Length: 116
Image (cartoon, rainbow, N blue to C red; front, side, top):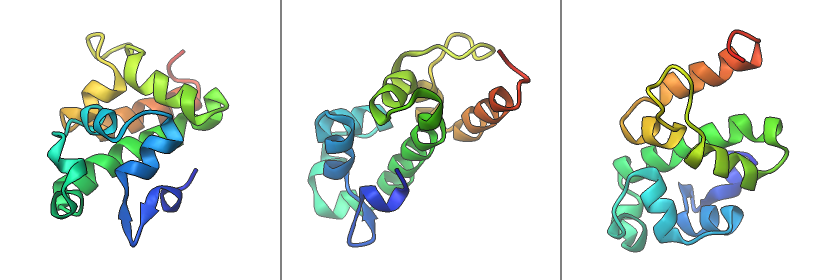
């Protein structure tokens, strides 16, 4: 799915992300490294930090979705699969720590056969 599928009035909408991932908005917040208020209060949902975190999470999931065949499997991978070379951290942990570029680079490397 493209980013637009998760948007509402020009902003990423935690509720739409939650529906696509078959979870709750609160779980989306935790997965993105945000507090519950970040997805419940309109002014917080639209903040730069909240939007950046949601975008980073969705970008990674969108990038790996073709590999797994579904959004749900990509979301499960994002949350639970330790990535080799990152001390056992998951994509979720890396993104929450500001390392989205490392995750995207890793996925690109796997796609071209550098990592197996």
